[in-house]
Every structure is written in C-alpha cells, then in structure tokens.
Length: 94
Image 1 (cartoon, one colour):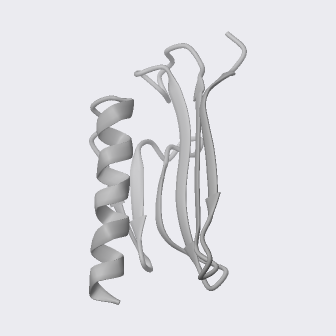
Image 2 (spheres, helix red, strand yellow):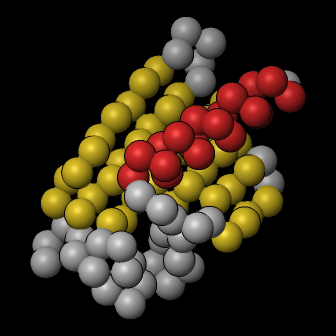
C-alpha cells in the first residue's frame, strides 16, 4: 500500500517555536505493525527538543531533549496527546 496522508498539521508560534505533526497510513508491516508512519516534532531555537517518530528500522520511539526512548504506540489520539504532554512538560521545565 502506498502511504497516504492521514493527518498533517504545522503551527508557527510568535516566539519562534514550531510544532509539526505528520501521519501517513501505510498498511501494516513488520516495521509498522499498526499501519502508520509518523513524525511529530516540537522545535525551539531551531532545534528539535521533543519528537516522536518511527523511522525505518528503529520502531516507535520518542526524543526528549537529547535522549531517545522506546515508545508504546496505542493509537493516533494517544500519540498526539503524549506528544503535547511532553511539549507542555518541556515548556514548564524551561
């Protein structure tokens, strides 16, 4: 199955922060058993500080500041909620 856009969102904030969410429906595979390819990123000062993705052969994972963690994918709604929770936590810590 060819990847089809499922959810695309990009927002630029007045302070320069950027949030970009890209989700494609791909069909299920060994690499993407849930049938989605995704990339969610929060950028501050030109640097990714929060990110969620499932890059080829790395599986579902998240980035928080300079560390990478495995991520348990449980659906698109929860993915977006988890991402924005991390963004909020980063902003609170900053």
